[in-house]
Structure formats: structure tokens, C-alpha cells
Image (cartoon, rainbow, N blue to C red; front, side, top):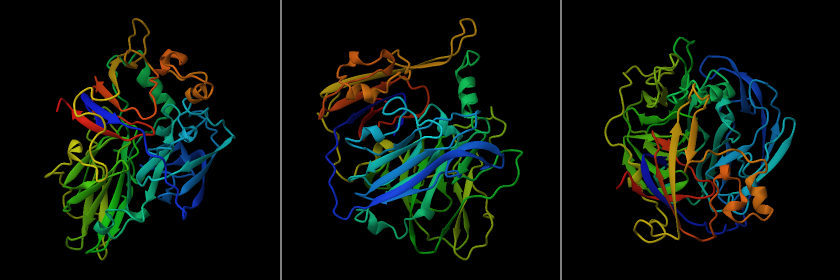
Length: 452
């Protein structure tokens, strides 16, 4: 969920996975290498999975196990050549060494090396994604969709079609390499800690930049009368999109892998890392309709970015193979309110229904300091006055080696040690603009947002 200036979340230990007698073991291979691609018409060297952007779809059924072999074939010295892969949203209970964050749960995979991730999916289903988890590397292209289908989905009666054709990957795209962007952002020259603005916004890897060549748009084909489950994934580093479908309302049925009570809306806003499943009915006259996804935190500071003009096409069978002839318009009507969504299963946060009604309470105060030329100070983000710095020994290896107290970890790791089964309340303050908050291995309940 997106974190605003103040909110409180609560999370709890997960139930043990339930094995399924009919579960499959699904082998996948991701070759991480450098390819020259032009998603928006600008050719550049990229770091991608299997030579494509977004990366290939990884899919399974609830209860299956994915065995994903990652081969590091990176060689371009302009970008990072080690890598690791994170499976965004997967719990990986008792399997955290396969979670992927470099220097936290594993050492990076060196160039020429391979690592096989075994992902026991357990009872999880829903919409997820994978991406590099080494510094800012995924900005250069290592990101792709991951979907776990549920043959017994409680919402199954609401839709007719749910397959690869209904996956919508929204992303931002940069022309410059991630290490260069990171260096510029952190530079002492960046006294106002201004963000690095993307050059383009993409829908399923297709978009354009101002002054660039004409490019095809992403097309989503539908048949009149059918109901479609579209799985929205924001695989961005920065972009915040406002998503809507011209002439079509939708029903939200999943947020970040959690089934929710159906919520009818006209548009939603989706931050980096977030996922939604929406159901639309193709009940309009046969024609082409705009799929709208303006990047609402875009800026003219990057002259390449037309942040208002990020569109795909919803094409009815029988409509011409062309863009819609109507004006795209803008989103209006009912906006999805994240705090108003209700889980379909096990609603209600654990703990007692008041502030502090948990076993442990952590207050996380975010702060950012701009660069300083006078002191040669770089831009610095901190949590409770500490900036994270990768430890020399990955955090998980310290745990396996016996570390059990907060004092056993480097100060820059900012570690909090909790006991299994404890209910934890987290209070976040100080976020300076809409920013997602993601917790590996857990889901959480938002119980307070901006004081309400």
C-alpha cells in the first residue's frame, strides 16, 4: 500500500503452508543479460531477463513450487554486472534465503554465475512481480510479471477471461544507465534532493518519448459480452500512475495478492510495486477505447517525458486495428480509496483496536537531507536517523550464525528483532511525497491513515 505522511500498520506471523497432493514443480530459467532494446523508440543497452522487457511471465497455480534458475550473463560495464532477484510479494516462509535482496538474504550472483531459487508458493495466489534487488539495478530493465492462479478463486464467478493477455505491466523507463542516475541523485549538487524523472511511461513495454519515432501502443483485445480480469502491476522505479479505461467502470477484487470485497470504481492510482486485479465487462459498442495511465508524479524537468500521454488501446473484436477516434479524456468519477478496501478472508487487524494495542510498537521516522557542496555531503535518506548500508556479511547469514539481539547487527542495518507470533504495530512518519511501503514476507493491515 502507498505510505503518505503518517499511517500505522500491523502485521502478524503467517500460517504454515498447506501442502497440496496435486501440486506441480515448475522449472523456469531467467538468463539475465544485456540487450539493445527500444521500448519507447530510444535504443540503449539494457539489463533484462531473457532478452525482453518486461521479462517473461512466470506463472503457477496455488500450491505449486517454482524452481527458477538465474544465469548471470551481464557484461556491460556501464551497468551493474552482479545481480539478485526478488519475488515481490511472495512470503517464502522458512525459505527467506531465496527472497533475493542482495547483502540481506544472499550475496549477489557474480557475472558468469548461476543460482537456483526454489519458491514454495504454499497458500498464496494473486498478482506479483519479480525484479533485481541489487541497488538501483532494476531501473535498467530486470523486472517482469509473476502470477499465481487459484483454481478455487472465490471471485471466479465474476470473470470469464484471466490469462496472459489480461496482464497489464505499467512501468517507467530511463534512457540513461541506473548507476549514472543514482550518482547524480545522491550528488552533493542535488541540494533539493530532486528525483530523477523518467524519460517515458510504458504499458506492457510500449511507449514513446517526446521527439522520438512513432511507436505501437499496447493493445488489449476483448469480445463483446465477456468479463475480463485485468491484473495491473506497477513495475516502476518512480512512476505513480492514474489508471482508467475509457467508457468502462471496473470492480477491484484483489490488492497486492489479497482478495478483497468487490469495490466498484472508475479509476485508481497505483504506486511502484503495487498490484491490483480489476474486472471489466465488455458491454460497450464495438470500437476502440483508450486505456489511460498518465504518470501523475511526472514532471517537465525531463523534456522527454509526456507524462499525460501514456495510453494503450482496449480493442473489441470487429473494431478496426487503429487508435480510438475519440479524445482520450481524463479519469473521473469514483476513485478507489485504498483505506476503504476490505479483505475478503480474515478481515480485521490482529491485536487490540487502539493505538499501541500490539506486542511491539516500532516508530519509523523517515527523513531526507539534501546534498551540500560546502561540506561535500551527499543526499541522505534515513530511518530513525540511520542510513542503510549493505553489511559485509549478509544479514541472514548473521542470523544463521547465531545473531539474535539487535546489538549483533551493524548499526547501519537498522535491525529490529521480534519473536515468532508477536503482533507488531509500525508507525511511519515523515514521508515527503506519496511513496510505497513494502514488507517482505508479510501482509499488513492499515489501521490509521493521516490521523484517521
